[in-house]
Image (tube, rainbow, N blue to C red):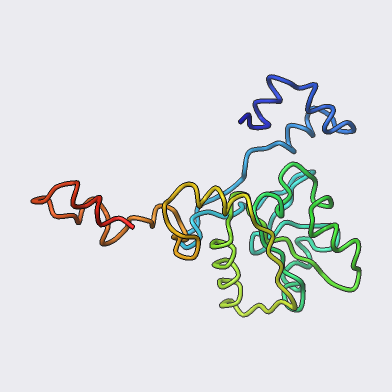
Length: 195
């Protein structure tokens, strides 16, 4: 696996073919590493950002031509909320090239809000939805686009999908962490208690 930032150094010509109408400066911004910040419940979320290609703000949504800083809060109720990982967020494309922006262009009767976050899986997206609902916002519909991050998460632990911890570091927390196993019986005893 080669992150796009490595390709920019190693194979700039390939990226120029992928982004034929963009300058090297714009390509550098489009392949920017995830811009996330810690969150106490979700683990991390998109950090507010203003640039030529990426604009993230109110409730960590990615803006479009129709929904921006000036009307994001007013657009929350009655709109279609879209959740997902980097595909929904639109990593590597400008604001108006994301899936929610394309949906808005096809369906001018509805407002589509992009709550995609790079690296999120369905567990984190549901938690983000719950947080927004607890704040009193109400969508008309909710759409989830998932797959890759859920599969990678399933490979990273030995839990069935329905029982997978929301955050991977919760997998062995509390009763099953190293600090709580019986030192008299040793690590083998602890290892047998793991799911």
